[in-house]
Image 1: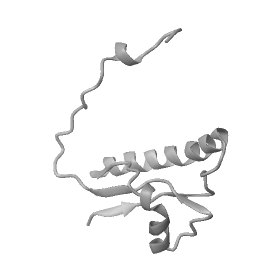
Image 2: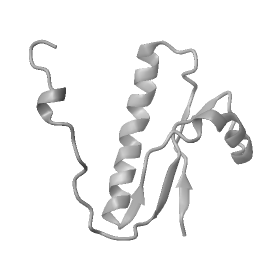
Image 3: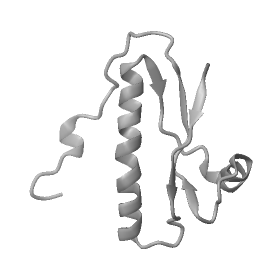
Image 4: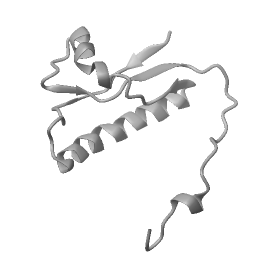
Length: 103
């Protein structure tokens, strides 16, 4: 059965400084990424979305999450994949995005 995983973090970054925001996102993102890798190892597909963003307050209400104290960080669909013929995505050539010693 498909499911949604909605990682949350205590505290809000709405009016936080860049340093505070970096600390918050730097703590939740690796945990969620590890979850997504573990899911893939078990044949489950995931994707990090920000679909909850525009409706975060309403979603928090439905889930009975205290919006003023907890931030819904992302909205992750989770389900078994249709196939296993995964391949690397098309990428911009490295020379177009890598800068060394200068821009």
